[in-house]
Length: 444
Image (tube, rainbow, N blue to C red; front, side):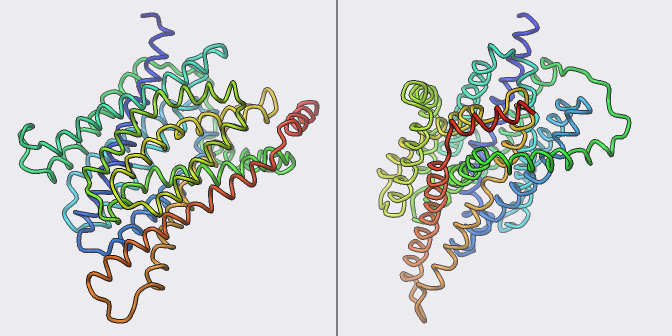
């Protein structure tokens, strides 16, 4: 294998490695185990709010540090070092979930949030290494390889973890609860092991480090402020980024909170896990096909279609009554989930000034980290408020259960605001005007 191919595969295998955290932990077992084990005696709406706030705080922290660390890594030639630090922070925190005792919901949220910081923080520098392992003529295909490896790797380990939980005795494990805890250890091992390919096969271009290490971080603030000033004058880019922030927040919220919502409605965890597997294995080929649809039909139309599908999914999700419907919704989400993310990134490239892609994509990625802050918190707050409104004096146990489920429906329904708001702002985006604004900035 040539050095160039080793670098490409070393880079792509990091997506294979860290996607195990996204599937098994974030989307799969953590919401279930949090509700049934770490927060077993709490009201379902309270535990949803706890999980939502935990997700939001972790996303907020990463969003705040992303531009600072990005600038420091650029100038200090330290992208790979930062990736390794955050990746193994995530590995350590994921393994630590095994040690959290029953009922210790606060520790579970804290360790999970730190694991999320490791996961999201490493992704900043993983993305930044892409131009170093792929030339301009291969950057799309290499990026797609990483995307596909992530779906495949995350799905395979998740399938193994599901088998461990469903048939613990086959694996020599005492019960399903212990199997979930061992699944967290398996994710840590998988993530840590396959990250070594990135460590040893990907070489970062060396630059002379800046003499003042503190200045590197100060420069992060300056770069953010300078780019923000320009974005404010580029009205088309500003509109698109605002639209993207809203609708991608809705997408990420559904990814992170769907299992918790299903549990609140009384569905079995095995049904919810199967739905996640459907999304995972449908998502890989669907994302490729949806990208081709965007090429033939138009990227703008394809993004609108995906937003419309998510609006329909949200409305249907409010009214869902059985597991068959949940499976159907999983299939529908799998058809558009990867597509809307991929096409949003490519559409943005049409609006930014040539030769300044790194600067403007840095701003784009920062806003992406801010996504998943509003949605989970909105879902939790609306659910709690709805329960207070619906709760009668001296309710029976049956009434409490039904009101809790109705409040959860209100919570998921609130996410529709993000998709509608994003669609409205995206409608106002004029691609041709955006190109003219970018060209004018290039001429300065």
